[in-house]
Length: 515
Image (cartoon, rainbow, N blue to C red; front, side, top):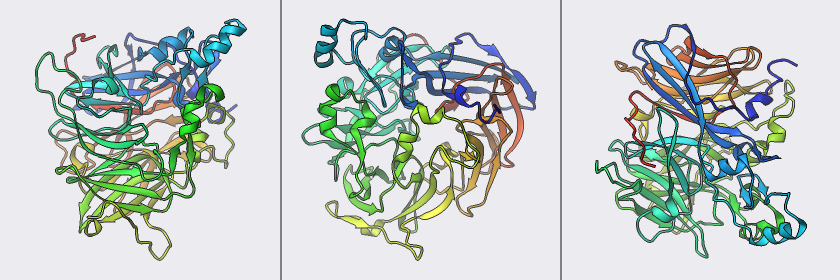
């Protein structure tokens, strides 16, 4: 079996290594590159003796690469959620994950098993495996539910669980929030949350920067900027976009079936089973005024699905919105573990390609929030501009270019049926692109780090984890962002699972336990 085919290790349970391991540095890392890369992703794929079904069921595993004076260390640690504890020794509660329903301990006798299906407790869905983000001068691990965990970025210790439903100020119930909140230049955090109920709502929420008080609560000062109802069923949301003046909430036709939620104990279904693709629905872009907190209007587009928005900005009387889009939601089902672990066949795709699309929302048509305006189609019959086909996990120069016109986006693509096969740098203005790959290497989401004296948008480096099955290593790859060529790497003699998203910070905060 070739290294390209022996890819199942990307989706297998990993051992925890909480003590830093020294990496072998090869090549030349920039002298200015000092800081910490923390990545998050699934790392344990069993609950007791039962296998999880979906990649997004894996228990959150934090990875840490620390770079200082040309020396690099690696460590990892699982997030200490209730879900993780139950995965080690499954108990008498129902364990729900994105794609799994695991009933109480099957060793119970037949009567207890019958009654537990209807009356057993459900564990909180607190497996925050997707992302890490800064808020109030602290670092949090997050997913798409109502929980986040404060983590210590130096030790990767889990410090505190935060429950949006119970702790968010005011009268709005926050039942879930996207995995990709935005941080504004003043340190505020903006996110989209959902309130489930007889009348469900989407909520644009904002959490202010830290006040500096030692006893400040994580969500203190949080408020709802705007709430509005779904247009055709509660949609699945993973991310959203900001411009300087607007929040753009994208509503796709992947919506929730309330009956499936209510009957989940009978049908033994997880979160993904509660969703369905409604072919009769159009996609919607809801535009919210950031300052006034009002929904100004809605644009409709041909149906599509997206996990990841890239960027949005205002120019020439329009909002330009870029995202990695699919024609439907098949990609969500393609991420079941049985598909990801099946043999890779050259020329055959395991995963649908995501298109990098640009949508144009004319600001002059805003003003009627009750009626959706249909986006104009071009001569090609499309209501968007195709910039590239085959990119996911996009990153760009966020600190300088979020909400502003930009030129470059970096992402991951498949090659000849090989998932996570290469890295891509795309010029969104010219559609020109370059790629980087190595035989047998599986690459992770690229993270851009700006050079301290950099003047141009792509002056800096791109960091990515390269997992090489054949030589049993995981490397922190450092590419010159401008030329997209390798400068150096830090090699760890260990295979890690494929992670999802990460955060690089030059100076991590000094932490003391607040648990």
